[in-house]
Each structure stands twice: as structure tokens, then as C-alpha cells.
Image (cartoon, rainbow, N blue to C red):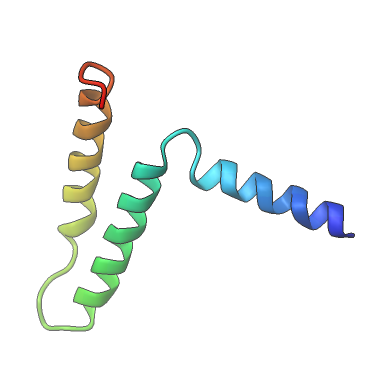
Length: 67
């Protein structure tokens, strides 16, 4: 049973994080920011599209300009 749990945890990690941990952290942060802002009277719909645009631009920019 423990082997199955480890295999499932590795699958989830590979599926969520994949090749770029920065994108996973960015998406998680955008979801958290949207959830936090949704509890106020300010509209929160714009955070996810903005985050996707920024994260997409950063992933396209990174291969041409390595760290």
C-alpha cells in the first residue's frame, strides 16, 4: 500500500509541477490571490487571466535568456 501511495504522490507532483516549478508556484499564487480578493468587495476575475499572460510571457522569454 505504501508503494502505491508513493507512486501516486510522484504522479501528482509530476502532473502539477511538471517541467517548470515556477509556473506551478505562479498559478498557485494566482489562485490564492483570487480567493483572498474574492472575500472583499473588489472584483477578482481579472487575476487569473493576468497571471496566465505573465506566466506565459515568462516561459517564452526564459529559453532565449537563460539565468
